[in-house]
Length: 257
Ligand code: ADE
Image (cartoon, rainbow, N blue to C red; front, side):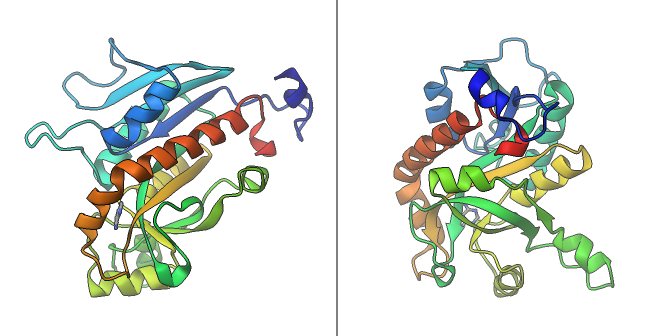
């Protein structure tokens, strides 16, 4: 670790110490919880009664926190989507003061933009595709375009695809949303990324996204079916890639990613 820290591009900067990894689905989170041998919080940082779950522990020189928004208290399904993701990110950043946020999980991919099942992307830019406000400047606020923290060394080292992500609160895509996603020039779509980016931005925490493709949105198969069929295999791929990313981050400064 000392060797890498000495190579920090900015002399007075320190190696990354605390990371928060936001993951919307339990099945996406658990393989990583096992890899890093994390433990579920017994004394929650979060308000009494919320379903949010933190798994935490040391992995090499990193304090790792995997945060899962938990199950909907009434329906018992994973609390996917922008609202839960924003709330849990806000509470996690306030409580843990991370050096870096990672949002990882599955995404739909567009074959027209070169996406294939199992591809893993580092996201360069995020935007929303379901917030339409046709009034000058509010239109841009709705789209909510944001850049991720740039990680050129990580991308080269791990040979990852890099492209844009578009976020909306639906697994499906209406024709109007399709047009918005095309305007956002996105290769992948998810249900949390741009919302988490918003919270990271207002709290001034660097954020990166690692997303793996479970379904091809413009491929003609029903999205929900394709997503469920590929979820387990793609989650295993994602586990390997996120582990490699964490290994790469360990001992490095932000500027050197
Ligand atoms: N996550 C996985 N596939 C998705 C899709 N098609 N849309 C939104 N989020 C997803």
